[in-house]
Length: 123
Ligand code: HEM
Image 1 (tube, rainbow, N blue to C red):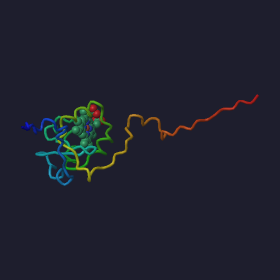
Image 2: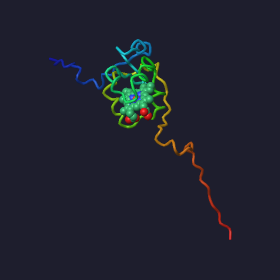
Image 3: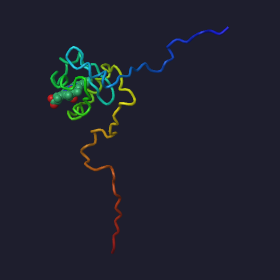
Image 4: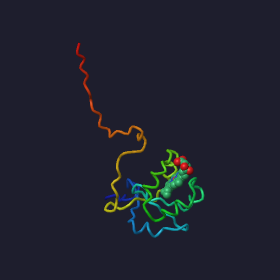
């Protein structure tokens, strides 16, 4: 006799996937969803807690706020706060390809291509 144990407990992730059109419907202060780096966040309850104010969030409501979010240069703290507000991700075919570069090393100014110079000392 086979024991049936097809419970969902073994499913590795229960990530919900949304299309951009789906996210776009939640664009006011009653439902404020924003896409940041292909993740979908429900910021409805965060609007009046956001240190940057609710206005900026409402401007991006229903849209992709990745650029604005990065422009501000949000702290690590801010990035950690986002975690629990994530409600899902953008469907594969509508994902944007983010540049892997993080703003953490911006000061270097170089493109990561370091040229090695050999010095030759002539006597
Ligand atoms: C889940 C999403 C977000 C979280 C958790 C978040 C959190 C925060 C936090 C903690 C700060 C205080 C400064 C810091 O620690 O970096 C901040 C400031 C700010 N945020 Fe956000 N933020 C989010 C999304 C956004 C988005 C989408 C925008 C732009 C449309 C934005 C615009 C700003 C602005 C303009 C400030 C003020 C910066 C300043 O006063 O210098 N934030 N945010």
